[in-house]
Image (cartoon, rainbow, N blue to C red; front, top):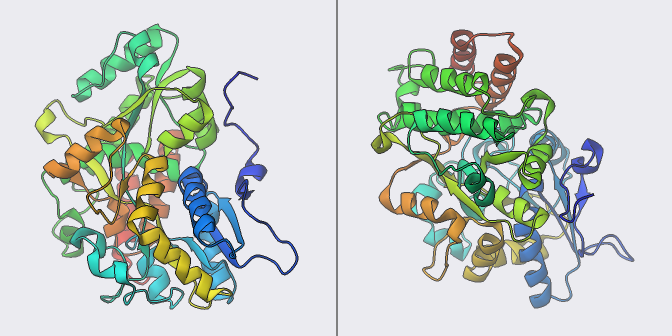
Length: 419
């Protein structure tokens, strides 16, 4: 075992993790039960510690689960009248545990009258609920991009690329130094989407920012759009040796471990992965940048939007305590704590937050409006994302083609009856 804490653990251990330091069941049980995404463990743990200091009489039990587990199990638990008091919810409408999907099924408590709901930026409000209601507490504004370990990047004589040609050249340079440019954990289903989102930001959304609306109006389709170019470039990067040797056999945790161990120069991930990497390797220097999809830097865009968000069970076992927690999370202190440890930006900005240097480009692009929404937040049903996961898997397995993958996504998009 190296001096740094390694990230690779068994899948069973990662399916459900109990947070260190939080009160588990004792006499009388906890007063508040929270479930969050494993990728947000560092940020949420920080907020819970501060919340318990200001609410010493509230005992908290928090568990962390992988995205796939949350999206599958949370809706099932909530429909059965069970589930945690507060839990991860995805903004928008793109998956089974998204704000609109859960709200439309009457599984989220309406939070419109909470004070924080009056101060949400317009783009945040648009993905925070259904039917004009606010149904979640947006916690962070995050991004998807290329995270580089600066030491590893310098060791191969490279710098963050600003064109797609430079990306491919940097892949060659990394291989000559016995590394890969990007670790890729496509064995974990949700990871499959990140590179394609990053590339489509430039190939599609730089010139068609309202692509989802155009799709709904039948003015375009996945198959007839530059999404084809984005997926072709994804495969081109794989063929060029840009990624881990066996992406379909590599998990999210193993991909981060490859960066920590120096086998990979970086990883295309959500910004919250910065905190996970730092937790595993204290002192590591990291920097996040957009992944160029063309040779025109002016066309480069970065997917960025509300990322982590939390909902309140419509029938919470501990309603008073749950409301106190969501209000704390929405406060300036809660937002700043969550994002200072999570290397993201507050979803409810108050002007007091100092962004982490690692996400300086995210903050700049947010200000310059060279970001685009996370694609699935604008999709009309939760099936498109699941089909996307599977099609990327099949592309890497060699069992489908880019045209066939996009046609499958078009069929999922057009079926508005699916949730």
